Structure formats: structure tokens, C-alpha cells
Image (cartoon, rainbow, N blue to C red; front, side, top):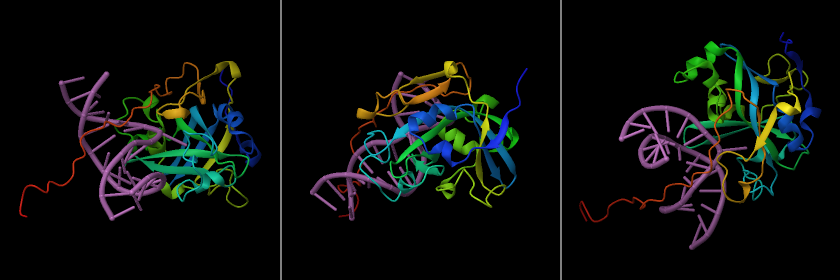
Length: 228
DNA sequence: CAGTCGATTCACT
DNA sequence: GTGAATCGACTGA
């Protein structure tokens, strides 16, 4: 018998803890995304922690920039970035403020609004693939840079109108949580086991090691042909 | 200011 | 398993 998911919104104190404590605690929680066409809800099954300016794998490494500014702000806000010229990824900022930590939401199970999600994720072969991967999750939830900085704890008055909220859901038992190295992270940041996922869940994305960019001859404009 | 490459995904061999 | 797609942030000169 399945216990009904707890729809109590999580408040800011949930995020105002060390990121390595928050990350595994996010598994089984439910993120509600309110779109123009209706709500989409995802039960988080895979996350990764990024731990401050000293973490070589983090966008916050080497300090604050315009892009990563949200990570340096208060916990409970969304850090959304654009990558590979076509994808968005969604993070939730953790405490303490100024430490620049965040949790990348890597995968989840769409538990409401699958039809809506499917319109943006037409190539998904099954519902379990709708949010199987960080860019897929952001796409399924219609998350883009406009949501960067969004308060997911919904301050006063933001309640029902908030574009994103995090609900208590059904946190998983520690015995169900596995951890390992972060996906796609290279260099000195590769070895920390800061990726957390729910054991045996089909919506968890496959691990991939960092793939260094193929170094080819740089194609520069051919100045030896054409008119001179 | 130009070069490099990314917390990825998809099509194809 | 390999390579392309695609653009903007970041870096170093």
C-alpha cells in the first residue's frame, strides 16, 4: 500500500544546511512546476552536490560571476544555467548563504502532468525517460533562464502563484540511497562521491565519465582561397 | 577580442 | 561507441 505523498511545502530551513546533507534528503521530494498550461510535478530520484568555491567541479570555482551569482545568494532559490548551446539545467541553492553551494537536479519521475511534459519531450520513449537527465528534467518542467533566481520556498504571498515549489513528498530511507562520483565532471572535481540516487529507480540517468572535448584542427576562415 | 569548451542529448555506425 | 549540434560564459592576451 502506497502512502500518499506529503504535500507540505518545505521551508527555507530545509535548504539552510550543508549541501551534502541536503542533497540526499532531496530524494523522494516533489518539485511542483506551475506552467501556463498547468502543473507538472516531479519526484526527485537523482541529484548532485556542488560545494562552494573550493569545488573544482562547480561553476562557483574561481569566484562569483554574473552567471553564478545566484549560488552566492540565500538558500532555497533556483540556479538555472544554459549549456551546450541548447540545454538548461536546474539547481537548488543550499546554505550557508555566501558559500555558493547548490544541488543539481539530475533526474526524476514525473508524477503529475506527464502529458504536458511529453509535449516538450517528444523523443522520450517512455514516461520514465521524461526527466531522465538534468537537461531532460529542465525541459520536461519547462524551466529556462527566466526562472533563474526563483524562490522555491515561496516567500509570503508567493504561495500558489510561485512558478516552482518544493513539497515534502516521501523522503527515502538511507538504505535506499546510493552515492558515487558526479557525472560529466572532470579534473580534480571528478572523484568526490557527491552524486546521490535512489537504488533501482528506472528514471535515474546512466553514469558517464567526463568527456574531454575532441581536439581537432581549429577551423579558421580560409584566407588562402577566394579573393585577396 | 578571439579561442575554447561546457554539471548534455541525440542520431548514427 | 563515436561525433555533431550550438551559443554564450569565461579566459588570457
